[in-house]
Image (cartoon, rainbow, N blue to C red; front, side, top):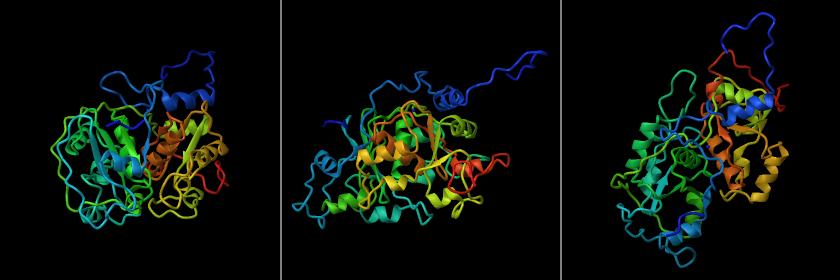
Length: 354
């Protein structure tokens, strides 16, 4: 199968502290050593490495699985048995259904029917760590915790991992980002997710899939990240994107966090607007035009945040699909930013606030 083709020392009297250009500070915040979590191998992210595709289409995945898509498929028939113990280099499917509005984990829906062989992934339990002070609602999981989850999902080194959900890929993209962050480069999101699979008349499999544990050895720290100071630096000297809905950015509504508004200097670019009504990403030229309209070019250091670091990962996937890699994630996002009373808050439609 072909697989789919991150000086506190006192100054002397009379000396002058050099003034750092905001753009240089932003660039260091986005890709510098302090921004990227340590990789045990010492290699770190390789911006020059060719990036594999970020998306897979339904018809392609169906062929990989040996299933017929279209009118010949019988959605009323159970899916064929899926070999839970794979040969190296084969597929692992992850179902990442989760209600972003807080309506449930998606596990019950998974049990009623999922892609053949798909393993259920719990976003709050496996794609996030325990929230601590100033970490936000969905902090990144600890590296060893995530590595254990990857193996529990049945992933071996060399496997291709396909993630999907039933809500425009907004939750599944968090799994995609973490897999890439952990060095599992052959991870892709199913474009259109469960809706596109059903639309193609492809079969679903009921019940829980419990695979034989895999042997993957994730290498943490492959995607660039920033903390609150890094996000502030990029807002001042680069491009900080707010992936939430525009009304949350403006501070008109805030359904999840106790403070409404946005990080001063951030630009609003809701990631959900990159998805069409069918749940698939819009054409690449449309997506690229949206990013260009807010000033994103290859030479501009950039980072993305949202409410808690989940839908921001979808924005990064969208950027990757449009050919722009190396954009940093602010994992704590708005829910972490507002936990520091010293952090400023802006409201209104302009980056600097009203």
